[in-house]
Amino acid sequence: MHNQLDATMLQLRRQKQKALIAYLAAGYPKFSEQIKLIQGMVKNGVDVLEVGIPFSDPIADGPTIQFASQEAFKNGVSVKKIFHWLKELRKKVDVPIVLMTYINPVLAFGIETFARAAEQSGVSGVIVPDMIPEESGELREKLNRHHIHLIHLVAPTTPFPRQLKIARQSGGFLYAVSVAGVTGARRSLPKETKNWLKKIRKASPLPVCVGFGISNPSVIRELKEGADGFIVGSAVIDLIRKTKTSQRRKSMGKFIRLLSKECDYAG
Image 1 (tube, rainbow, N blue to C red):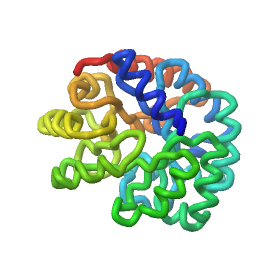
Image 2 (cartoon, rainbow, N blue to C red):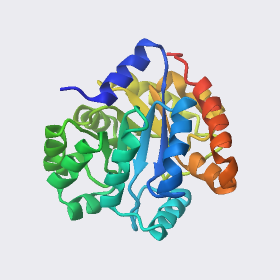
Image 3 (cartoon, one colour):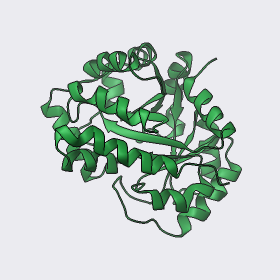
Image 4 (cartoon, rainbow, N blue to C red):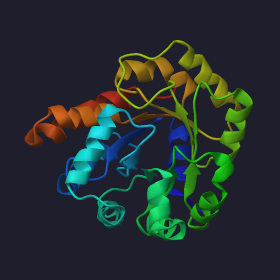
């Protein structure tokens, strides 16, 4: 079974590079602007794109991503429109695409319909933060049938034996949450995060990618011995918010290049 995410993670490891994974909420700033913005991000070093499906009651998203989701709702976003947009995006960029969503939108769309639409849109993985592994059997089975990984999260507060159990049930990569809490850019992370990442990476059968709070090159530099990839979300949204439309592609390109330069191998 071919999965573009697997192939990319393997290729990056052979090239001694960490994966730079960028998050955008679908529909923010607007569908019409996002494809060119993403093309520029990929050109400047993004290896994997994480696309968030806006949800009105997110448990994992902090204020920044909640803002982006609300703006996307104002722009008329829906799951159906997102899949249509992804097909157009897939024609323009060739990096793996991972969806970040919650279980309610999946159930409302229908699990089988969601999985089929995701495959047809070129999606390689799906992240569902409010779906625990013990209850994800049907979703995992249907996604796998469409050659899509279900990617699980682990947190520093998760007991280590359970972290290993979750790693065995995850696909594509293991999403390591850097801190207990919600998403959001942070200037620095707790010192113990580095050692925890090294421990779980050593024991995990999958690549370990860390997210929540990854906002600048120094954080990547500090943590890269313990991770195979870095997921940057709120910092991307913040840059979009504070930058004029005419300047976004240039500013985003510069930001992505700075992050990408830190993603060389060091462990």
